Image (cartoon, rainbow, N blue to C red):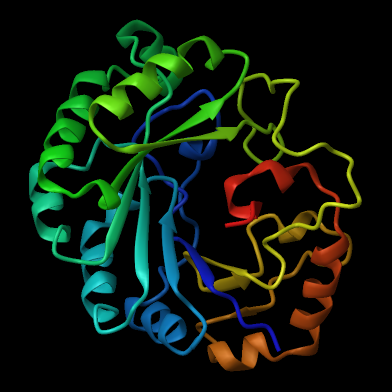
Length: 274
């Protein structure tokens, strides 16, 4: 029986930036949104769940949905992580969510305002830094962090981002850039956190992660479709209960294949041991 602890919800593929590291911003959601009550019911029906990570696109394009989810699961021990580019993370948002069991991860890959324009495809530096400055005063250090993506283009800027994070007393994580699935223009570094191929290293997302997308489709992870024979979702919350999805024979098959898969996405943070 598949009993995940880390739930990922991609509530949109749409984005308000034009980052050169990916091409998600070029696309629009092409299906009706999963009703919020169904995502909440699905999450709360997993007794092992301890963390919900809301990602995009830019998840804060749908702030009201985030507010509703936070409120509906506030009677649980589940921590909600929101990964944002920081543009919609204004004072009103921070003040609203600060009372919840939340952790906000802000994507910052450089402190150079000119290089920022290349990274984001927009001139949003001042807005993001202004929002982050306020967040760092209104939230506790356990509620806020910075994440950077390491590529050959961004590598010279990592130390300055780390210094900024340290000055704000927040954690700074670095994720290796991979080209597969993101269709971006960045270049992978040669020194990854995991050696590929390495059949001896299990993907730590196996039996731990569950990913839900905006139309209700459920996957073990967002890269599940890269695994041979695992292209279809393990279920859809518009049509099935979470227990039906997790207890299916197909879900067990996907789980078994994940334990031995050897894809380059092993270097992503969602696949690391924690």
